[in-house]
Length: 161
Image (cartoon, rainbow, N blue to C red; front, top):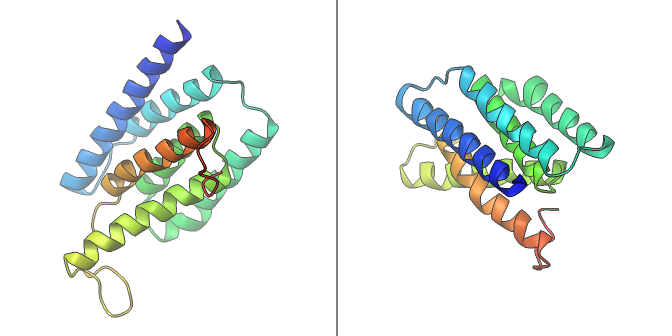
C-alpha cells in the first residue's frame, strides 16, 4: 500500500511540475496553484518515506531562505517555488542541502550549455533574451534524483550527498 501511495504522489508531483514547465515555456508565467500541488505531493512523500527529523527540517528551512530571500533577486519567484518543491522531493529520498545545491548547479549548467549553443549569452555571461527556467529545472531533477537513488544503493556517487 505504501509503495502505491508513493507512486501516486510521484505522478502527482510530476504532473504539476510538467504543467508548470509547459506554462513557463509558453507564457513565462506559472500559476501559483501548481506549486501548492507539487509541494503538497512532495511533502506527502517526505512524511511517507520517513518522518522528517530536525536535520531535514533545518536543511529545508535554510534552502527556502536561500531561495526566497537571496536567489529570488536573480530569477523569478516561480523558479524559487520550483527549486523548493524539487528540494523537498530530493529530501524525501535522502537528499540534503548539498543535494539541492547540486540540483541548482546542474540546472544552470544545462541552461548555460543550451543558451551558449543558441548564442543567447552576452559578453558579461548574462542572457540576451530571458528564457523560461522551469523546463531546465524539471529536466535536471532526473539526473540528480537518479544519482541520489544510486548513492542510496551503494553506487559510488558521493558528490551529491
